[in-house]
Length: 466
Image (cartoon, rainbow, N blue to C red; front, top):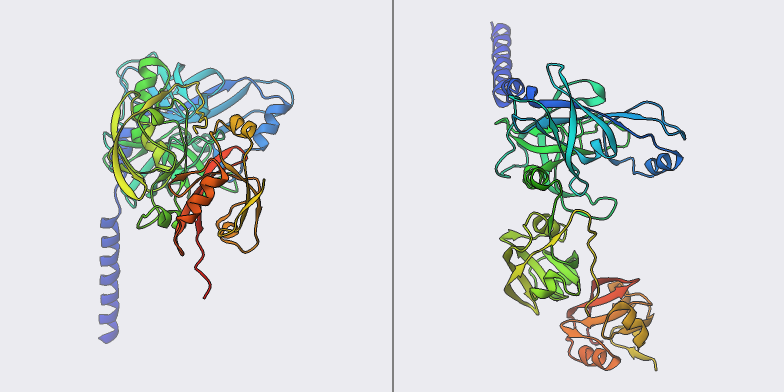
């Protein structure tokens, strides 16, 4: 009797666990039935790569790549190449979204629907910075899928991808959102996309395909994977809906994309810098340099300001700032919260514009003695050097004493110091005066130019010896 009761109890518990597990897992069938007809396969033909093109491809890091299926031989001869990716229909009259890198350099683009119909596609516009492209086919009464109106995506929520990995048409994979706001700078060092990270199985051929939430809305466009093998290892990245909506609307209206632009060089705030600026913790984007005539300069932003909020969006690290600014229409005035001289201030900042073919640049604005307290040997920078950098003055680091506060803070020979704490440094006298106002144990921010690039470092003033 006891054995029978134990077996019965085990079966009941097993059934209960099975029912609970089934209840906890979503049923994706309704989403697939309602959305799959709007997902397309994209067949691209482009000019073949020569030897130089092949060598450039070999230089792309294997562990982080944009992906789509290559077909045909690769070699030094110029031969047509056939590639494939995925996409999705966003309007009944034939507008289709995919990745820029799927159609880049295409001489022919064919769109294949789920019912096997094929259409020649026109590339309406393509944007390398966001890796998005808009296509148009001559068709009507197509099934379209909606792009989510908001970005209320939660880490841990279920998501679904449909695409054509390795040419296996209209495959479905599912997973969860692993993280939001991932920064993956482009080859040009630009960083305008706060990627969604998921563990959805994404492989070559999925590029440009949609990422759905459980309501059947597109919350992202699959774009990149992290891999060492060339296949999925559970780290995939999608362009979020906010970027998709902004870019596609502009491509549809004008065929190109204009982004918000400030004209500043920024860096992260570490623990020591946070302390030196009076912050309770590391946060914000520290402005290392403000461009001459830039929107930032015209709005009153200065080198040494830390941007804590921009247009109501918190800026937790420097990578957050271009994500926010890039989505703001040029000539829009927004409120910005900054930390300046140890106090929070609010400024009205008018955002400028960066055209599709423009590259962001930031132009600079602005006998031997020892900075013995900090362990530095300095001299006033030559006028010719300062003129070349576009700076009014500074002091050059000739030597950093071993085991000194300057060495601990990362100062190096050849650095040009232009600011110490809140004091502008144009001469040795300025530097000595600023050092004289420092307090023992204080962490002070130092702005310097290193190999033409501005940055801030933090130095801790030594305590007097007992």
